[in-house]
Amino acid sequence: MTKDNNKIDRRGFLKLMGESFAAATATTTLIGCKKGSLKRGGTALTEVPTDKMTYRTNHNTGDEVSLLGYGMMRLPLRQKADGTGEEVDQEMVNELVDYALAHGVNYFDTSATYVRGWSETATGKALSRHPRNSYMVATKFSNHNFTEWRKREEAIALYNRSKANLQVDYLDYYLLHACGVGTNTYTTESDLDEQFDTMDKLVLKERFFDNGMLDYLVEERKGGRIRNLGWSFHGKVEIFDFMLGLHDSGKYHWDFVQIQLNYVDWKYASGWNVNAEYLYGELAKRNIPVVIMEPLLGGRLASNVDYLSARLKQHRPQNSIASWAFRYAGSYPKVLSVLSGMTYMEHLQENIRTYSPLDELTEDEFELLADTATRMIEYPSVPCTACEYCMPCPYGINIPAIFTHYNKCINEANVPYDTQDSNYRKARKAFLVGYDRSVPKLRQANYCIGCNQCVHHCPQAIKIPQELHRIDRYTETLKQEKS
Image (cartoon, rainbow, N blue to C red; front, side, top):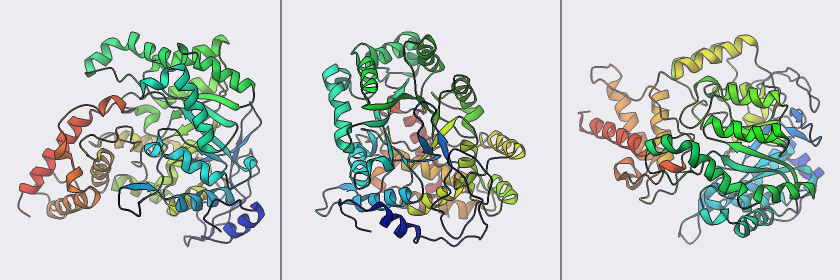
């Protein structure tokens, strides 16, 4: 396989990729899965199947979409050769995209704002090396953080720039990004609550309606330059209901909607999110295809609290903890694709196995995950999904890395609270050493001054400065304790 931008012969690269990247786990045999169908089979394999991916049919266009979608939000980075900073590791992105296509993944989701604004261009470079009909690309009208992009001329330029970055003349799936988010004029939490009825709808109106952009995009769909038009949702339920009301009235037709769904958010959504049970139910009633984001809840469902993980392992010893979350999201019949931000090859391989083909959850397994979710919310983790909307911090703090380390330590029982605990010294060392390894000292929580710039961009409505200060106080307490 070449790593430049030259076109690849599809048959050649399929053969090459199908023979490579075997992973030694177990030797269960899978039953085949026709596109659009769901059949049961094994889960753990020595080889990654190239021809057993589960597909779902989009009834609007007839698209057969891979149940595993590639989320291009967390691409691999590397240091620039001149040492001036980071850049996307394009060779690695090419390799991951080639492998995904060779193993049946055909849905790629990006945005103009992902990976510091680099994602669309990197995705376009990787995909353009393949036949246009071999993949479907989704991107977003991401005007929620920049006021100038809400003006009609700038908004149209943003839309056209996405096509140019992706090197396509039409978009398969285009989303109004993060409906319900973008109310960054709020200054305090009380302002948000008091002003919701007016401010949220005014911001939504400004982003899509006042500038005529929604009508413009509808015309683009009529002209075939957008094949499916939809929206993604983070916010209060009134905005979700408002957007569906437009569909019900016949004024606008939504081809799909993207929501956050996992076995915790099904009944225990936090922050600005709404329980996925309601969101999915309303979309299913209207027969609107659903794309899923955050099936792992920002990685929190990839490695659960030890005793909860042990229960899942006891039930399915050969399956990873993460595979339970992906099977959960994929087992709902109106789900068109489940997005995963796969930075590493091993994650891509594992997720391909999970959906090649999907082994749907049984009723008992749904109940087991529901009970797992109920127990999980008892732990004081931070509901961060590492989306990086809060970044960059003007003071250089690596907010997602801090929360990820803290949550990981909770899952692994390495957040000691009592010096009398038998595991205290070991857990204390693991927390402090892991913190310094995960987050450079100059980017740790003690540098937060509480400017609140990050708060207004967080789709989980985390009180970020408060959480950073809490973690910093805890860290300092550990440092002062005798080892």
